Amino acid sequence: PKMDGDKTGLIIMGEDYAYLACEFIDGKTFITLNACENARTEGKQQQIEKIETNGNSFFFKVNIYNEANYSFAYSTDGTNFIELKNVFKARAGRWIGAKVGIFALKENNTNDSGYTDFDWFIFE
Image (cartoon, rainbow, N blue to C red; front, top):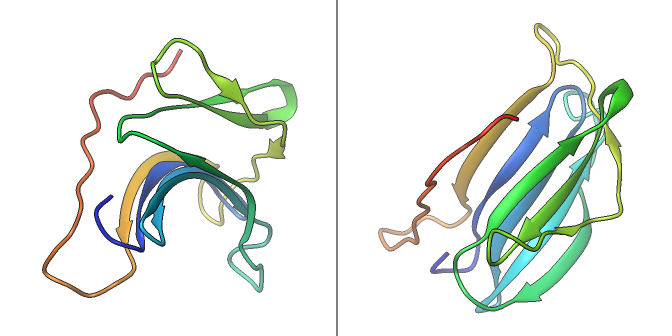
């Protein structure tokens, strides 16, 4: 991220969603965990975790358990992951099941922006 509002991350989405993101806020880099229940109707997104961090290279992971429960983890070195304690339940979307994806967003309109390089995306 380069400017406030730049955000990139890993998401599981359907009727509900949750995502782990690298976000630039007030000139600092944070790992944030966000979630929304009933997103299609009147759900409100909530920020659950906000962890200040240094650097600009991160590894994000989602662990999926029985009954479609999942939690997120992150690492700065690709080896030592910090698992966040919140567990979410994947809910199918309106036409198809829950989806897994990566994203990059910018909230502000400007010609100057940050960027995201995704080196790989693995399912195990």
